Image (tube, rainbow, N blue to C red; front, side):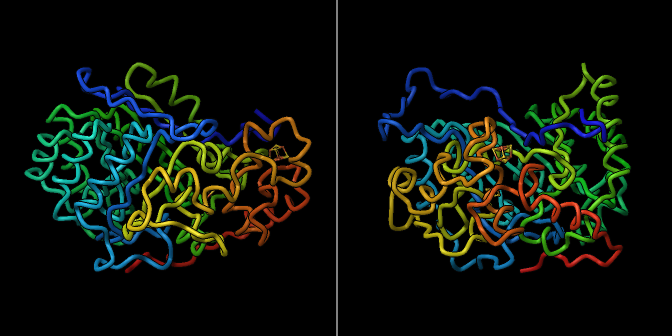
Length: 391
Ligand code: SF4
Ligand code: FES
């Protein structure tokens, strides 16, 4: 911990689910190395749709959302999962938007399961009925992550921009546990709810979740638009971090608590997505393949689409994936810093958002020549109304 009470490094939530190995011992589906030096990706984020009944002001989807009529069809997703498994992907995170908006969700889950992928459904809890959940479970779903906006129902509904959402989330979370599926509760933390992280953990424990993720807002997309309204004060962050230690001690036998502190109050940046093009890929609803969910915010990158290329070709040869691979592109102070293979100079999207240069040292790093900017932006806090995410 620093003198200010903040951890030295803002570690990202790295959620690994068990088992992270092919599930059928008779058909291990061992991937063939696709490139002599490039390791395979481990995770695939499948953004099945941008449609969502909620309007969270920190949504990680881009401001320009994909419409329904450009979404990939079922057969293309089936092909993507098979290509992913061949490439070495072990886990598929089925996300959105709200994946429950897809009428073919059960078929999609079944095809990922058949491809020997560990399937994690990331849902708002609104749009999936108990009946659908049971069908998903029968189709091979392995894990469910339900988001909450707060432990307080009125505040949660206000943040989600949807009345009654909280009760539906709780009902779905109970149903997940009743079916015997492992449950993670995910709460995005910001100024309006940071004082209730203890209550959010209590709620996750009461729901018998195995894990709770308290991830501070990452300021891209809609969250960047709402940054001043979401930004906590340093005092709030210090209190939350102190409480986190106590919560981990108190609940150590009951639940795993993952936490991400706000970038803007950290001394070192996070190794965003474990390094650009190193561990994972995102497929958008219309099939563009991105190194991270916010990559489209960086102008000039060329993204390849699964309609035109195989996932393997994209992983090895897509211009966007190769744009910031490794550390050779990094300027000083990263170029001669001993942490460059640990954090890869931080987040490319944040470097671009704050400096206009995606190759720059992430200004979150206290060694960045532009670090003062981060403190200035953190101090810009406003109790203004949210700009809700809408299609
Ligand atoms: Fe990381 Fe660059 Fe900062 Fe070193 S100077 S800690 S590599 S961001
Ligand atoms: Fe894109 Fe961090 S969100 S590299």
